[in-house]
Amino acid sequence: MITAVIGLQWGDEGKGKIVDLLAQSFDFTVRFQGGNNAGHTIVVGDKKFALHLVPSGILHKKVTGVIANGVVVDLEVLLGEIKMLEGEGIRVKNRLFISPRCHLILPYHKALDTAYEKARGGAGLGTTRRGIGPVAADKVSYNGIRLYDLLDWKSFVEKFNFQTGIKNKILKALGVPPIQKDTELAKLKKLRSAVLPYVHDTFSLLQKARVQKKRILLEGAQAVMLDVDWSPYPYATASNTIVAAATTGAGISTRSIDKVLGVVKAYTSRVGGGPLPTEIVGSLATDLRERGGEYGTTTGRPRRVGWLDLEAVLFATQISEVTALALTKIDVLTGLPEIKVCTGYMLGGKRIPYVATGHKELTHLRPSYKIFAGWNEDISGIADFKKLPKNAQTFIRFIGDYLKLPIEIISNGQDRNAIIKSRSY
Ligand code: IMP
Image 1 (cartoon, helix red, strand yellow):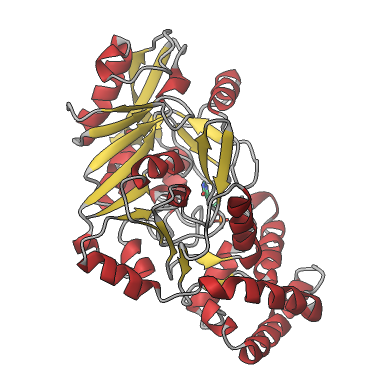
Image 2 (cartoon, helix red, strand yellow):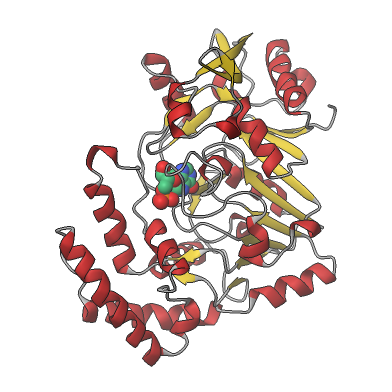
């Protein structure tokens, strides 16, 4: 049984919590794209875990974690996370396997990410500056260095020196201090010995698990609206984030994925630049941001917020062949007198579908809204859909009906247990 969890908006839908909830009944939890630009927050009692590279499912003792080939890896971040987890009594050794095919985020990638952003000036994309774009560019231009290369230190050093030489010329042209080869190599040598015990052929591991009908959970990072092909490029992240990315990123064909759970937040948020058709500004935005704790897990940046955009989400469900939904952060809307939902885009007096837009159209179009009455009752402890205020039920039912998908999970609070499971649609 293979299930994928995919974000359907601009990221930060609360995938970490959903993965954590599901992972307890899975054997494997797998990251297949992205890198430590991701930030998955899981709250367990009074502890808050923010994971960037290690799959969130690892918090459950019986689950094996896999960082598959599609993930780009910053060794320092990865090893820091492993250390943090071990410090919290969560054993990671022999329970986390990392593909040698993963490309490495190296110091020059981070320097270039920052330098390009600065060079763009006011038109910066708002990247997380974790080196994600530059490492992806190196990967497809045959300049990448993989975990595989680290197995042979001598050849790694040669490749690293060659690449650093080139990158330092670019950094110089951008007016940025060069990378100090020897200092960085000394750090990398230490990181190398710490990471090698985790390096493993993850394809064979997952292939065997699939044949043995083990339960595999594919943990998507970022979200469909940031997909490098399907977003309003260049306001994207440097990977494919749709479910098909699991095929290239973990060697698991979409044909063998039984279920795709799409995660939708009850409103919208986005961190970084780029169009956000349903964006809310002013005091309502500040209010929503504060209630929802909408600050980046990775960078701490305040997130932009907006109304739920079902035009975009509908496309996201189609491209990722979503079979069911998890609706998150519904509790954040409590107390709002009215709640808007975008049900289509209008441009020049005509309806325009999401897929026909580029970043310019998305900036200028006018969303059509359906307006719902809000509710004031505290819904955070409610575990039964029918006990929700009627107005909340109407709002939730509309989302399922519009997207023609069952809403199987509703999250109404930060805690692991703040969940309504519902299959009654
Ligand atoms: P990059 O992935 O760091 O290159 O950033 C490109 C864009 O994707 C920026 O707008 C980031 O804010 C956004 N982004 C990247 N990762 C995440 C994520 O995990 N959640 C939300 N936004 C993200």
